[in-house]
Amino acid sequence: MAAKSGIKIETDTDWPAVGATIIVGITIAWLASTTQRSQIRSNVANFRHDWLNNLRSKISELMAKLALLHSKLSSDTSFLKSPSSDEIYSEIIFLQTTIELMLDRKKESSNELTRLIEEIIKALKYSNDSDNINELANKISVKASEVLEQAWQDICSDHGLKKKDNSGIFSFLRRN
Image (tube, rainbow, N blue to C red; front, side, top):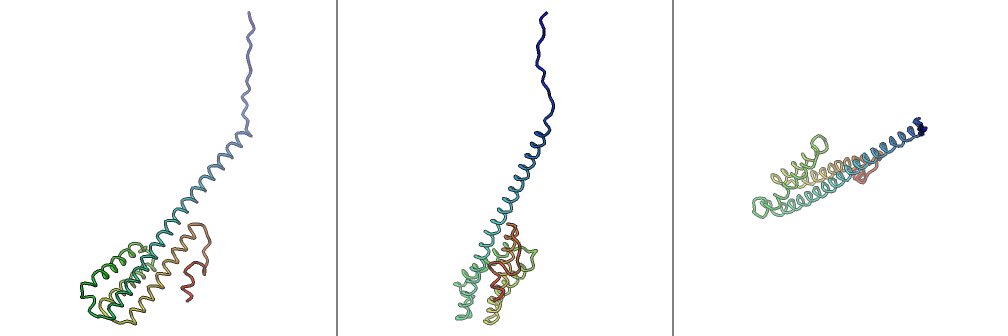
């Protein structure tokens, strides 16, 4: 009878290789997770930045329309009763509504800004007190700057930047 030949295979586990594979796998998973979280924060920050620019633009448009209406009312106190005022007034109401919808009702500064905008529209419609209107316009500018500064701080925190007391692009408005 012929002798059987065979190959003996040892199946000992190479534990250092298994350990290295596990470590590499965990490291790759951790890096992927960290990168994904960073990208999400970046996307949120970009969204906030777009929102911030849009809000700034709408507030500027509103202030310009309010100034135009105030100017027209200064020269003609019955301007709001004329048909030519309808377009300006409807644009003001549209901008007011747009701004209110963009703001966070949970934040006190947003609610104060909304209240001030409503107050100046009422003052323009029902009174011709130039000093009060100018004072309200200044209050709106200051409050809008606070809302925008807070949004800027939120963008910075989305990017993981530290919040500083006197930093930000709008801080100079509070000092002046």
